[in-house]
Length: 215
Image 1 (spheres, rainbow, N blue to C red):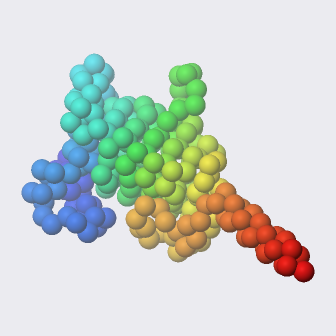
Image 2: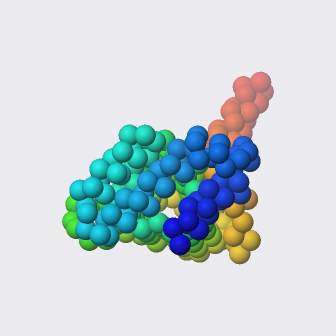
């Protein structure tokens, strides 16, 4: 079981990073892989109630990779962290199979109370660089979170969410394919879209003013 999981953690890199060339390169130079492998060990120690040692292994992983994964977090199969620097995964986070996180992602809590306080990612979720997913919320299967989005409520299956706070911009059964940086068919931020509309209106008004001045 351990060796199959180890092999899968390496093999998934070829599927999601076109720059990967061979297993030795992945094993030696991919901090996301190092962080996941160290977390697998730390989590086993955590389950054995060796919590101090588990935290020490986790801290070593953070020191070596810049990726902080609490040993209590539950992570499924074929999990991939691309680039990785600045990723934070909280204690009660649950991550399903075939998920992908980019650098700067936070799976964080919104309360100091004990219990479930971090997000749950269902299978095949992609979270873009810099996104923040906060609280005991659920991100549905095959969903994607755009870069720098802030998610504070549940996201249904087969959806793409962007913006601050994140809003759903598409919901489509075809989203079960991997998409780099969580870019969907319509990657525009709703806020930016509104700003563009305001600028277009101002431009129209300016032209009308110039026309009146000429008359």
